[in-house]
Length: 246
Length: 246
Image (cartoon, rainbow over all chains, first blue to last red; front, side, top):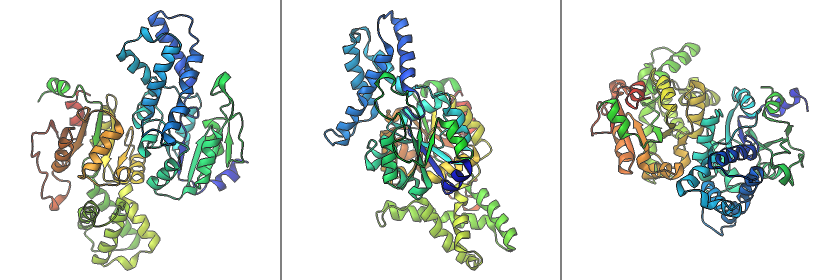
């Protein structure tokens, strides 16, 4: 699809929503780097911090699933992160090395993730033409703190706790559409995850897939490629900006 | 209160919420200026656009009251603005001069209000130290569009439609506290309206009053002064920044 035909396809687009973890920020390298720093400070050796990051993230889907399935009432992603942190500190046998307040601090690493190199330049271009915001499973305070630290130029923030639901619960997409107050076809959802786009499309949004086939490193089992004919496929947010004629 | 004692009072403050209409933006002059431009384009004479702006705003409280009293189910501020616009176009005897799409466009003037001269420089300073966002009766799309156009540097946006309620309904303040997920005493509410601060204080927030005794012009009947001992009183947002040691 060339830029001219894209501009035609997206000429009614007014708002662009972005998945955040994996699509905009590189959680794995960020947590790995931060873990190494903590290890240096604490003289901890022989921990594979890439594995630590992946193990931490591995609690994310099961944690959200308990909420989605109504097995458990609403809890924010910060609680899910903290519960999984306790588990992995224990399985990596380093839980005794941290005080409670240090654990609270470590949990905030998810508020301090670094963007992929293309994210800020791409969003800065896209923002000139469209209203932009995350539609993320992060909490409001997580997303706002992260954006502030990393200078992510959101126009607004839509978080899981805004809707008290996690993607791919319909509540999140329908809540966003209703809150923004425009037609779903005027909203473009951008994600590196096929299931997120599938849900967005089922509610009438336009869709753009970002190739981040290295997000999970050795744990990556899916999202190597666009699995449906999404409205756009791009190799990063700068590439997306170019495809949108920004 | 000097800056040193303020810094002590507000040392636990993490998030600052701002009323928007009247506190951050000057709706009256903005609507008046925009009205004059429309009049020039349409060759409309003999309309007092300051009176037009005040009449339009006069529908705001009764419109919200119908929602607050549950007399009417939730409608967004854009709907309330539009209903009042239809009334005043008629009472100013100019309703025949506009097409439906022009009326839709005129209603969007509330998305294009200009900040008071001190707002952007003040918020830019305050943002260095605190997370900042509106807690406003505006809609999300109104507040995001307004911020984008006027470069208001919010970290996040909390709108009436986030909570499906209007200030001073407790739902708005409690919803904000719950969504931000920190203690109410860590949140400072800033407004040019005593009743807004009274409600915020009743829910445990800190309070700062901004003197905008000229907001309503000749229609101003209250909020000439701080009516309680608010935690801070400032003559504008730059003055507030200074008082907070930013």
